Length: 590
Image (cartoon, rainbow, N blue to C red):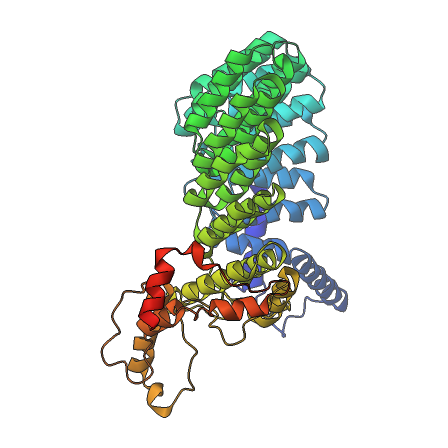
């Protein structure tokens, strides 16, 4: 083309390849001073012209190196637009469509060339007909072969948007329908248009705003048949039908959606939530069997991680429109189905609902099943709640039994709150014997957990400490309340003797382990166990302790008892009372 030829000439001059700048013969007499001045001015203007065209010339150099550089073609058109040459910009873009291969393109997408050309023609040259012709050549005539269907889809979308800007609604709707019809050519990019989400989204918007209800339904149904819909399309389809009072067809759209996106697809949870919410909003409690069937089908397919919210929705429905027994069965199923991290909260909710509908005693079997199903930490907390409930019912013995059972799950080093709660319970409701039993259990649990190690973070090192009553102060408080004296020298736990001062020989690790074994035996109440061999002088002799406890106090003589009793006098018994025994006794004395 002439512009290209001019650029090549200027480029050759800039690169020093020619330009008619041969050396002048100084001996020539035909030149005058005026001619010399004109040559200088021409050279200066030529240099200024080359300088102003320098960006275009450099761009031409880059395009000579790689004609498939989309970004440089776009930059060339922008340079012409900056110079006010819209025709040259359009010519450059037309040239780019012939030079750039879609499979070799770099630094941009080939569809950008088409979109930029249409924009220049429509907005810069004010030639809508030419812009429409360019897009029609690309979309319908397949003049340019794209490697990706998405690039061709952008051209089709630009064609539709052009008609929308011209307010030709029918043409825009027909073009959108044609784009996804699958009849746009035999190329790979043309065949892929029917699966382009960009074009389907555009068609759905146009059908809902410009088409009829039936044409919109046909578009959504065809997308579902081709399996190009997304969960958002299903939600929009159902909402579109619901707004126009097609409730059953809306539910049918949900059914197709959950069939197309079953669990564990990320969109299944959203579809089921909206499906159940719309169904409950429409029918409430009037179609209870159908509602239960929907909930059961959802929960049978739902993974445990997503199930809690559906169980809560199901339980709330049964409480509002069904039976309390069915609602509690739903919560029971939830406790078994949810992941382990959610079981504690599920059981607490189950207990609350059971107390609300059936009374406090109905929570006992729930607490028992929760203790057996939960991990040690949550189970210990459940035991505390269970004991608190029994305490509120004045069932002190049951509460103490629950606390004793839960004690084996709570390490005193890691769960001091549990033992503090039991400590306070015994101070408030126990006596000296029950308090001693609590201490015995605590030491047994400490011995059982003696081989378990925790790091400082797990044990909550550095946290605030809550001061409680010491064991001696608690014993004194209980004794004062029971109006009895505290035995200072009595062992704290039955079966133990008073410890001796540790000697240097006891510092051996093996000796410490043997003493721990004897401590466990004594704590378990095995009074018939034989002493451990090699125990040394400090071993615990349980038989001696039992012997001391079984010693009977001496019975004072009757005469001493009578003297100590006031208001009682002694009187001789007549001999006639004893009869012959008195005579025999007299003979014996003599």
